[in-house]
Structure formats: C-alpha cells, structure tokens
Image (cartoon, rainbow, N blue to C red; front, side, top):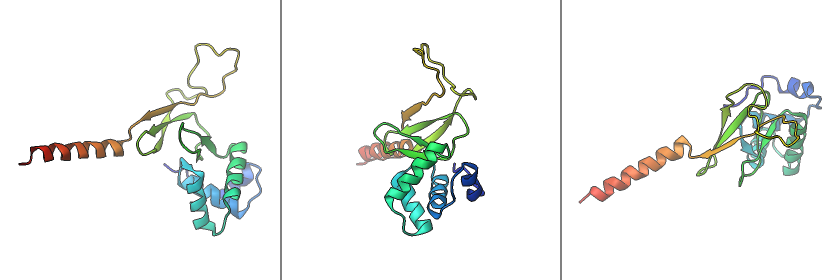
Length: 156
C-alpha cells in the first residue's frame, strides 16, 4: 500500500533537504509506487514533471536513501527498489515468477526483530529478511492453467 505523503514540501524540509521540482516528483513517484525500481520511478516522475534525466533520478534517490527518507531494498537478481516505509521494522516477500514485492510486518516491533545466535562482535542494528515464493496472482494463474490443461485432457 502506498505511504501517504500529505505535504511533500514539509517532508523534504523536515529531512533537511532543499525543495526542488525533481525531488518533489521523485518523492511522489516513490510514495505512489512502493517497491518500484529506479526506471519505473523515473517514468512516473517524468509523467509528473516532464523532462528529468535518469542521472537526476538516481541522484535524488541516493540523497533520499542517505537521509533515511526512502529505503532501498535489493532482492537478489533484481534491480534495487525503493519505498517510503522507513519508520518501522518490516521485511519483504518477493515472487519468483513475476518479481512482485510486498511488505511483511515483523513479528516483534523493535529493531532488530531477529537475534543472531552469534553476532561475532557486531552490534546488530537491523535484520533484513526476504521471503521468496509465488504471489497469489501467479499462484492463481498457475491453478487456472492447470485446470484448463486437465479439462483439455478430458475432452474427446
């Protein structure tokens, strides 16, 4: 579900960022398309703003990530994706077929929600878990295709 950003100008200022048209367009795109890769964010930002270079989009996303305004996730084998849901401790599920990503709330509210059996001297600050599987859409499509195949086999 998209994270509502009611006043993007105030949000940018609250994070100590100068308000620019590019930043407003990229923030709106990330908020409207959680877990989107940079190319989709760029397309949405261009739809909102007009001309905007890919380099500018990456620069804005990097700035937003550095200050904690957006979170960058990198599922294996996938382009980096961005979301505005940063103020909580949550994880992600990724569909192996279509690449859809959804948020999974953590079982424990505080970070990190998982404790390692041996931290090897690290002070653990965050746990990031990615579950892999088949999303409901792909699973439903596979079931429909299986049913159609079974019916075809029964036909005279």
